[in-house]
Length: 386
Image 1 (cartoon, rainbow, N blue to C red):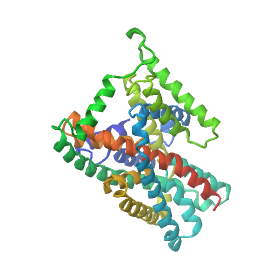
Image 2: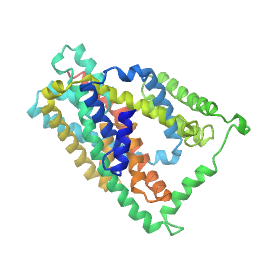
Image 3: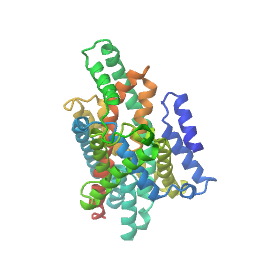
Image 4: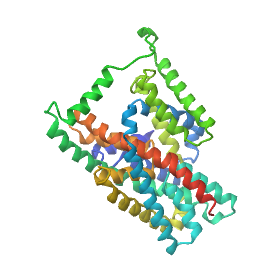
């Protein structure tokens, strides 16, 4: 918690020029490589079981921040994010194989296009195939590309935030402008929430809120099992969160109102950063050239794809590139980076609403398309190529 605290303070002091999760990641890495016990996070009860519960509840909460129409409108962000991954695959597989052997490239690319799940899938696959010399590569790739992805995405989101601020200032006083409509729709959604369960206030307790969110999360995971993983359970949590909010079963920001949102988020972050304990400076030093070269090739592929797609899809180049870069970290980092930037760039509450409404849905949906869906599929295919 101290590492996370320092990260947030540095972010606040630098007005999010240095993102909090980047500082926290660096502190965790240094800590694990020096004096911090490698099992400190699991000792604090942030286990895989906790993460499963926290992730599901938080994604239902994210769904409550969007409406169904808004979610469906993000198909462009999904296309850009997925085509950005195609750019990464193209550059790393074709150019990377000129410099490194085929198995090195195959082991490193899936974590580059997704999160810890892809990294662990590749690690287990390498162990099963008896390729012990490359076992450290997937997790090391996951660690290093996150370190690069956080500050780069923060720079892009800040530029996009400033661009949107100009549009906000031009339209804020015009009652018929798109800016005014976006802000008004957000405020109307908060003040005119439906409620399926109209009970007296004395029954509207935190546990009643948590129970409803948990029911939605449980249903989403159950559907995921019925579909045998054809649709990732995390994606189903987000979709059912949107629907549950639309019909009035859960409130906007339900977990905030139940006072547990930050605790779940910090626990989830702590668990993600605990993966930094799986490697050492010596291991990374041995494979640093392969990692850096493949990351640069992958990001270049993302950049070119985003650059070409931005205008046809009506995105700024910064927003398109940021959507593609969600492949480097996914949820919850995409949520934290975006909300941090919106809060620090905006000069008032209405401006923050406008920035958040324009940027957050794109980043969340882009992150799910890449990390939760595409990266797992890519890892499953690449395992067969080892």
